[in-house]
Every structure is written in C-alpha cells, then in structure tokens.
Length: 126
Image 1 (cartoon, rainbow, N blue to C red):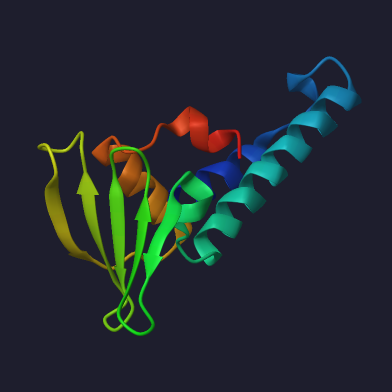
Image 2: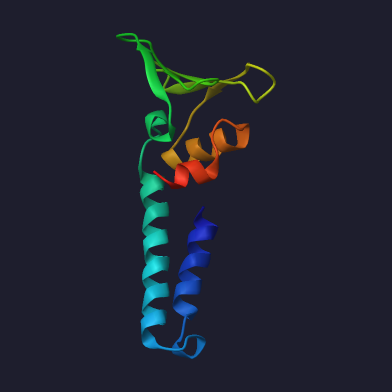
C-alpha cells in the first residue's frame, strides 16, 4: 500500500497546467487525487468491520465470539485472540480459512473480495 500512496503522490506532484486546457480541470484532478489518497489512508487507519461490507451480526457471545453473516457467507470473530475465521461459499464450498489477523479495514475488504464473498463495485457504493 505504501507503494500505491507514493505513486499517487508522484502523480499529484507531476500534474502541471500544460496537461490540461484550463486551471479548473487541473484543480479538479488535484482535488480528486487528494480525496482518493485520504480515502486510502482512512481505510488503513480504520479497524475491520464486516457490517460495512454487507454482513449482519448474527450472534454475539459475551466473551468469546461474534458471528457475522450474509446469505451464503459467515465470518466469526474470536474476541480472545482477535482473529477472524471465514466460511465463504464460493471458496471450496464452505471451506474454512482459519485464524487470520486483519490489521485494517482495507485488508479485510481485499481478503473478502479475493475469496469472492463481496464485489468491489458493491463496496464502492458505500
């Protein structure tokens, strides 16, 4: 992710007036780049939350686990070890990917996307 942020900053710094017809377009693209950069950094600082990705809380025990579910997929958060277990229907028909520590919301979103549990375009709308 650090490489992506560096590329975005490099693109931002390389934008010049000769690339665009007028100053308004240049300003628009610079603001768009800054907005995208702040969104990426926000996702890096935010803890993973399955509720933001369309999961609903199914059950929560007092001290051990929280269960999140969509129609075919389930995420179990182990409160004691702060690890996630995934049951993803599209990934080997309910094979369980065990004991994954998710550092931030972006990492969790990308993992679920790679497992086929969510689609990128659906996440963008939120």
